[in-house]
Length: 153
Image (cartoon, rainbow, N blue to C red; front, side, top):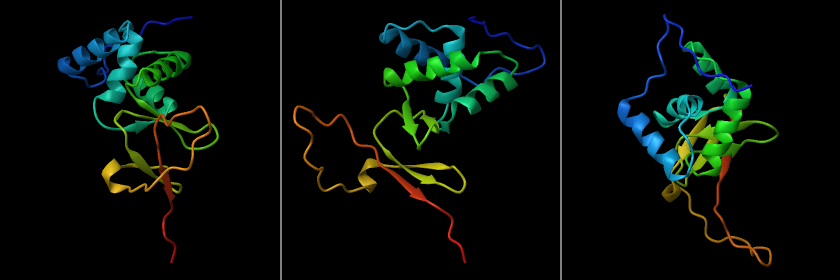
């Protein structure tokens, strides 16, 4: 069932400027996608500032504003935004996926103790060469996640 977002009278909407709403609507439209209210809520939350969020965090924050969007809608929207290059999907192992609002190429530090992701600019990482690619393939991109932990003692 596709639920429309509803607004509780005593809670604020996710903070998004009119400019951000127009930019998201243009981006979606340029990919042939409709800016449904649910898609706009998810996109505005993630794209209003550089951030890394899980689908569960996005769902919780949207619901906290008084809107109601289904878990399936959040996942479907994130998958669609990722497939069209509007956000990046970062798999941190197993079923732990984080969505990154910065779609341009970059890398990450992942603190395994805190879960925090920190961006690394491409010019801060020097990759001398890639191994030979399997026959009939070409590189589509390189993403490096450097896992760190808190020092002890």
